[in-house]
Image (cartoon, rainbow, N blue to C red; front, side, top):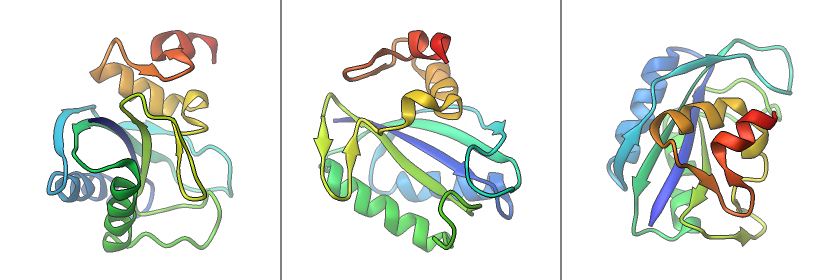
Length: 147
């Protein structure tokens, strides 16, 4: 199945944090596309440094919950601390879509419930997939034009 994952970092060596997360993800999924890094202002939360954000597309045999668990393990391995909601972080990995799956559980909602509001997800995603779509919401390019 095709998975889209957003990456972000605004603490420490942001580029190294993203590269390290990509290397860890590559151990469990087949990365087929990777955007460039985009520097962005934080959205929500306390005052904090700018982010580097990227998006990757991968093929995976993992079901969405298994992939999410693996992503959380990678965040922990790379020093992610969850102390302040929407606070600064060494690495943030968000599962945006997995195929056309629609999932609503206590730990996972697909498509990601706020992806369509976030230029820092949509712009890098569109860079690597001009035909990108969010199931139920339409083309990423059209969504970007509306926000």
